Length: 260
Ligand SMILES: [Zn+2]
Ligand SMILES: [Zn+2]
Image (cartoon, rainbow, N blue to C red):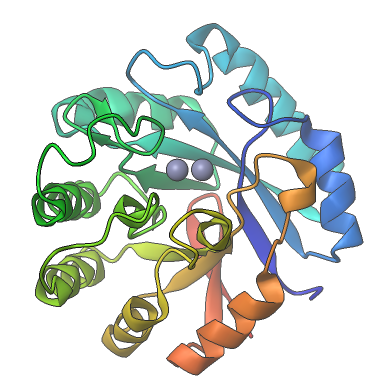
């Protein structure tokens, strides 16, 4: 798999369990071409994101790492940023501060509810309503033009939250917005280890995304070194079955292609 990338990695700067060298060692073991660190930056008060006080440290460390390792595994500097519709300007400023290769835009909040860590509000509204709110935010995130990649496209299903009625039209509309916004999605392989038991996005959505022509990249959403490139054999198979023949790589927010 020496041609593949893993662009979704969390270290101790946010909520990951280890530091850069440990992830890099596993990226080597897995024979990856590139590893991209994408710690959480969240403009809200949560304990799982990079502290603002650490911004300069992270910036320096990553810059040095990118310069230092160029022979076997290439290091990329990414961020996973939470999308908040009322904070687009602040998000823009954060992105401008870091010399990033790519930015993943993710929706982890519905209003103030951090639905991917806090289970307490499930059941309060219909799941259809949650899908509606979630995908509207994903559409806004894509339209904002702030992000290179939309993170874990159908994250709302994480804790087995399935819609009561068919939401394929909403999902297709969201994919079309992403296409129009010229944004990339990721095949995030962590979903299979969650309660939902399938990749983000699932195969049906992957097929629709491929048929619409939305470019895709790969991420394990690693929170520990042994997560690096998890389930990538299966991911490759699923990508090909869905009709994908290439994935996207990034450098300085410019895209390249990798034939799979
Ligand atoms: Zn995320
Ligand atoms: Zn993540």
